[in-house]
Length: 404
Image (cartoon, rainbow, N blue to C red; front, side):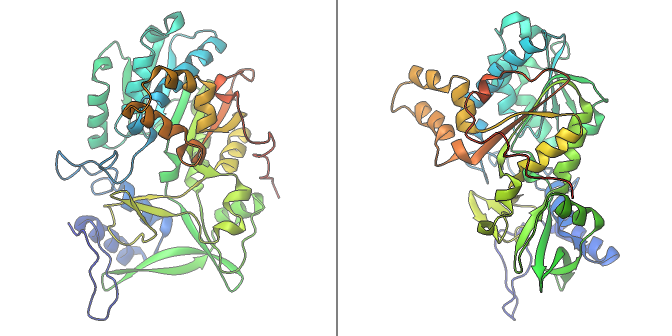
């Protein structure tokens, strides 16, 4: 595989990446014409054979997610997040009247570390939750599923305690009573990229010529135009940004599957007002490779992660229309403190590696405030949850998005 950009004699950077994936993308463009950036990103990350998240790593010693990978998540740092989520689930279980089963659905579980930490923390949970618990992981990558199965091996085969589904659509309507959560999932959904040229908002498409990917511009689809109009998003000339239509569809699917309980979404992102403000005139799209960032989507295609910040207002408003009321909105630091993180820190040896790892998730200048936590509920009265004791945002912050 190519690991470095190559340059032709004219000094133009050639597109690099996984050879078979590059061939597949070029073939699709040759057959259909330029493709939307969202389609390009979908192929780069989720192509069923060669996508970044789907293809097995090249060697047993390699990893994509983790301290030695391209990026790391909170569960790679310390078990505290899984422990906090388990504590929050116990409180939710009581609010729901201790249903049997209490179903937990995690989508985008990565290596399964969060699932492992959650299940471990529920072993001796009150009201026999550990016996009533059913944990469902939604994962379409066979290679990632194998890693997850290894992480939660002690619970596999225990009367259906842990199960896997390929797609969110495989959950029957109104089938989940319990908790649906995700951690750093929505930021990896394929996004449409927009550019304002000569005062006109246009969508970025990807073309290919002489093995080089290039960007071309097309008028907005009706769906994208409606999104901007309904969200009251006005973009000035020269502005570039992203729209995550996939996130809106996903939230509708989650609401459709949920009967009673809560949806908890952890990710980095902003409200609509902040995400499309003047400070982000170049958007938020980034690529991650060996824990370095780049804005070049056409280098290392299929070999690097791609992300864009989440519009939490869109998630909240979409959920509201689909029956998910907003329970609260906070950041990771406040969520963890509300669930007893300070007591955990007091039990750790100061100056120890474990102490500093836990602190890393709470740092206000890092993951503590960068990551936001949106909680929604359905089929129940608004629950009082410890994870929402401290909410640094005004209650109306997620209501900026309004119909035209």
